[in-house]
Length: 256
Image (cartoon, helix red, strand yellow):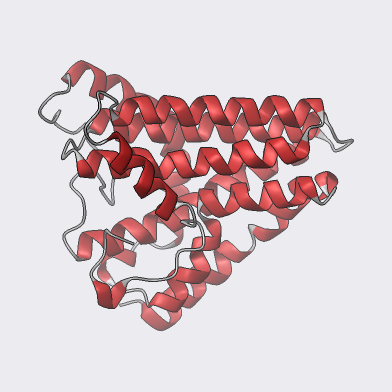
């Protein structure tokens, strides 16, 4: 948890790939590879994982989904090591994540006998889970002068940073708002005062980190290799109920 001071670092169950991600980033520090290249690599890894799901190669699917999660952390690490923060990279990462999430769940739906409406509900639940985790996590980082490209409220198009074009930032920000806007609004409506409440304790952040994308992909991988593919979509629908539990705990015990 390099983005937080020591006293407020928590066990992030979705960030298991961080040690390997740091090694990857360090190995690329003095090369021509950029964080965008790593983002493209995680997109490719995710798509390979989807292909493996469709073909029934579940162990390989698990590997590429977890590798995607590792690379998803590595692009940010590389940006920090090279000191090249980027809104283009930040929004490209998020846009790629949500599209891959939809494709992964559609692949799971395709190999099961579940109804499409359940897949849609699972996708909505998956995204709301991730949005709640990111909402609380970004608030926590901002309380301690976190990284410059993470904002609690994504309401306005940011000014392009050095080395990137404003037109690229504009396009990706619009895509981000189209894809994430409703999820952001829903979570904000559930807990409007989170940014003004007490600091969310480490134990609660650890619990909420089970909503992080890395942990979600890990669970999908585990379900696949255990032969539980039929339970993936129902699980994410049911686990979404924990959104209300976590919000209730934060508001009830740590709100203003």
